[in-house]
Image 1 (cartoon, rainbow, N blue to C red):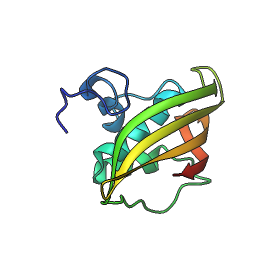
Image 2: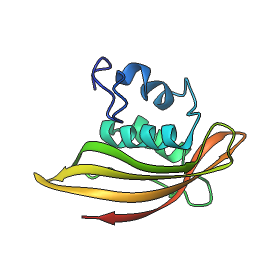
Image 3: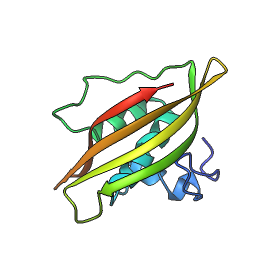
Image 4: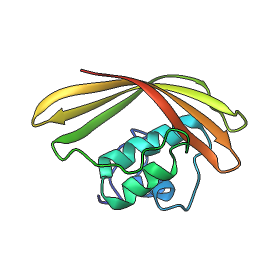
Length: 133
């Protein structure tokens, strides 16, 4: 992905100054929403570095051993619908979002309410309640 293009997370910033520093380990998301957006961007970008980032930001209690990307799925947009807590000083946060995709050219969306925890390592994704349509 060209680093001068808009970040996939929908922030209106360039990827190079938005989510890429998180993916490269040069910065840590300050909020649960920033982590969720950076994880969405990692799914968009794909590849081994993105898989490493996604697993590293997944809470150890719920983290899978590995992660595979669906090559037939292309993420096309993100809407953050609601947040609850998840600020820089909070320990827990909830982010509700809708992520749009094309699978083999057919549009759909993932509507998820995700739970996050923050500890000394930073924010981590715990689990989500997801509906695919």
